Structures are given as structure tokens and as C-alpha cells.
Length: 306
Image (cartoon, rainbow, N blue to C red; front, side, top):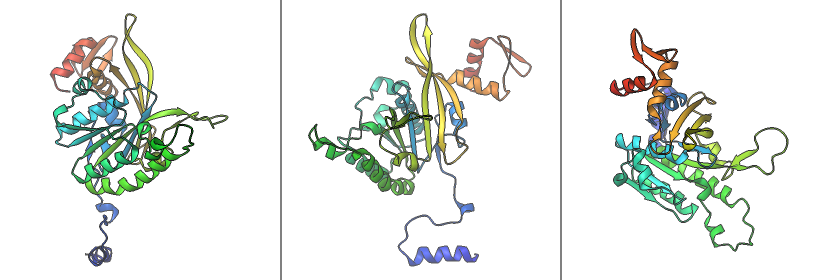
């Protein structure tokens, strides 16, 4: 045992310090909950969402943010992780949760009446051993003071102060309990922004963007149509911040309203990029094996468990 290790052992024995103390080379990599969307897990660098840390998924309305989080819940449940969904928007439904792979009998859904209650629930559920907590959404975490105030009463920065205090309260708790907390957030016009640069911001001030280890921005890039009917949308996901891997990476995913994310096509795109499959004209090949057109290739991927 070297002098540094002796010092760490002595400090932890002689004080009431309850945090983690070790050298950086001994610090374990965080456990990960994957989305099992190949291109998305790849751009995240570590293969998914880190446990013990905060994640923010944000974007404009109707860009499948809640659907992506429900898929994450479904994947976490397959790993035996207990999950909680804080539905502050009162919008999550059974039918679509099932389509995203969620075992609805094993998912606790809580609907906090104000922001303070939401953070108390996060702390309590983390201490109770729940490994994944989804908060949908930051915009709906209304401070209690604002709820009790009259409509004509000014309430500037109340939500920002709520988020700042809430972050400070939960960050140590979720690290200790190895809980992944994912906040869904919405984009707002930044009315004070002039000149060049980004003209939008997110709800709740700056606290979440500072505390989050991962920030993912979701944008709709187009519609998927059958004739004149819109049946889905094409999405771009960008890692705006990533403390655990290279940031500013992006991918494109198709999302269908009836079935959810197009995982098979995403797998095909990744295999094409990694040269596991090659395309010549409209025909796909796996090495020397001729597979056929795109539909046959997607069927081949499903049958071979790729």
C-alpha cells in the first residue's frame, strides 16, 4: 500500500466522510442503460445513458422525446432495473408505452402537483433503489409559490431557482444510489437574444445544463408519408454535451406513429457504415452472400439477429 492509499484509508476511517474517495485509475466506469437503437448508442460513446448521473433530452414539441424515454424504460426493465416515470405533463398513456416495450405493470407513474414535490420524489425513489427516473418535463415543474400566487403577481425566475436548488439536492443522492435521472425539456424562444447565434433556450434556467453529464437535442428533419398521409417523421439527434465521450456527434432515426422507432433500418445503416453489409445499386451483400433488395435485407437482419 503506497502513501496515497494509506492517506485515503486513514481519512475515511477518522472522519464522517461518506462520499467516494479513490484514485482516478481505480474509479470504475459508470453502468449504462442502452436505448438499443444502434446508431444512437454509438454516438453516445459509452453505449447509452450513464447511471448515477443526470441526462437532459430536449427539443421542440412533438419530436418523440417522451417516446425515446419510454423506450429507455423498456430496455432498463429488461435489465431488471426498477423504473419511475414522473408524468408532470399528465400525458403518458398505456397504449403507446406498450408499443415502446414498457411493462406497464412494473412501472410506477407519479404525477407530482408541483416542482418541490417532484424533487422530493426523485430523492425518495432513488433512496428506495429505483435505478431509472424519467421526469416529463422540466417545463411542467411549477414552483409551489407560483401555484399559490395570483395571476397578476410577478414570479420571475422562480422555476430557475427551483431547478438550481433541486439539482444541488439530488446530484449527490443519485450518485450514491447509482440512479440514472433523465429530464425531458422543451425549447423556448430566447426573447432577449439579439444578433447572431442560437435564438432559443430551454426551460428552467441554466442549472440543468450545467449539472447534466449528457444533453441530447432532438429535431424533426422531415415527414414520412404514405401518399398524402403523414405516418412518421425523420429525427436528428445531436449530443450537445457529453462529459463521458466526444460531444457534438449526431445521427438520424426514423420514427413511425404506429410502431415507434425503426430499429431494423437503423441497424442496416450502421452495418453499411461499418462495412458489414455493402450496397451495389439496389442490391445488398454480406461479404460474398447476395441478400437482395432493402426489404429482403431488413428481413435477413431480423432473422439473423443482427
